[in-house]
Image 1 (spheres, rainbow, N blue to C red):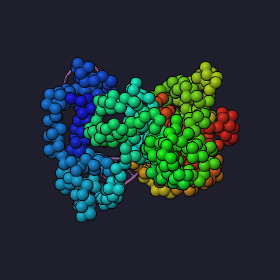
Image 2 (image 1 turned 180 degrees about the horizontal axis):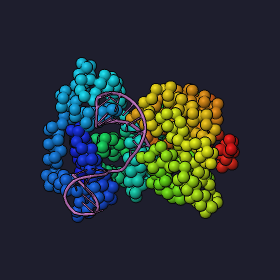
Image 3 (image 1 turned 45 degrees about the horizontal axis):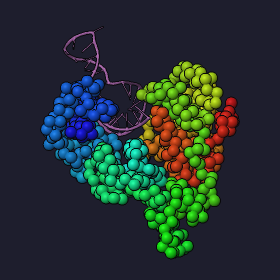
Image 4 (image 1 turned 45 degrees about the vertical axis):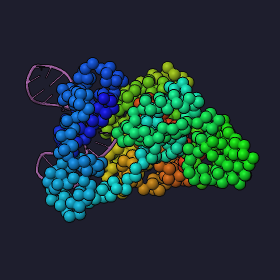
Length: 569
DNA sequence: GCCGTTTTCGGCCCGACTGTTTTCAGTCG
């Protein structure tokens, strides 16, 4: 019995219980048990007693025991008999939870998205206690959204899987070099699968290891050059591995990175010169096939500069080649201006974050914990801000080559006021203003809230300006044209939040900001040292909008940054 | 269901807000 299967079964049980309207604490107990198993590095056989794990007691241990001895869970089977499968996707509808779905099922016999839609259209739902006409309308709207949802997976779901596969490939001595390719490499918001190019002379050994060490649901193909599998995850993810010889690496990587349209343009360019591009190399008129040591050499062969993957759309990258050198690169980044520590909801102390930032080669950064309104995130009161500043100053004293600024991520409250008085704000080096509440207010109200922040002389930046989560929620729908105009008028920075859940501002809005000449900061919003890696995603994403390096605040030197933040002091 | 006792039940992170009702589930981080 696979540990992953047990984790997934426990989570499935939680899901079905939720649909029954079970006690939420009971539901979360099953989820916690699953998380406890997942969080423990040991395999099942290495644990003599699972109930020793915090979060696993008699009930969940019985489920595990059941799975180990019979290969299935009788509890889950019982639940599946009582709860229609068609109810599962309804949990994804905003506004509907287990209790409401259970009620819809019990009272109206609803068992699927289709029957829910029919009941709403027949005005049956509004007759139930706790439901009304407005709810009906909302459900219908969200059902339409659900149907429109593509099969593509969001980047935040793929990123940890890519990381895991990279670690596995990196550990194989038979693998000479490798790279993720496809739309993930192009920093697409969503992808239908993950592609890897792997250089090896030992195809057999690499294939065996991939098939044995990955948690696989289905092997689609396992040949000499291509291995295609579906991984056994919460949502199944397809992964293709292309095994190539070292000489083919550059052209194979280019070919499988795409985009399709980019490749078409490249092949046209080659054809005009009497050459032919394939994944194996560039064939000359005499039949001789050229190969390249890397992609840069490949592009150079066609008199092109290195084109970063994220701008390979098959359009502008060929028209604006002279601008490519103005795009930001990871090594241009000197700072991260948005992160959290244990003072609010982060996982590491000020000093631990500081050291991790120094290790990344940054010159300065800003600690920006949540403000008092966000009680669940342990937001800071003015008194705690003062104490935190002392800790930041102590860190700076011990590290003269680097500087940590004291900031805040301050909430813009639902009533349109700011969470701190000006007296508090003016003592801070850097002030971020953010919306984390009342997303469903009218655009007018949302804009009024944002205007308050824009007009405050102590606010420097608006973080994640739309509040969207990729493939999950739309955000609070601000009027971006207006917001960008205000940012220009009041001299504020807009954020490109690099967390793969957000990527907010999106490409379209970043382009608008650039045209308006509004400075952008690429920030990780790290709640953990490992989240600092998101800077790479942010930089690659920024390239999609052709943001010029000098408009990106955190490429500035410490002196330039300081001049900006001191303006209104 | 799990945990941890001032051992066998009460709390489980939380406080404001929305839409619905007149007490509450769901949503935000």
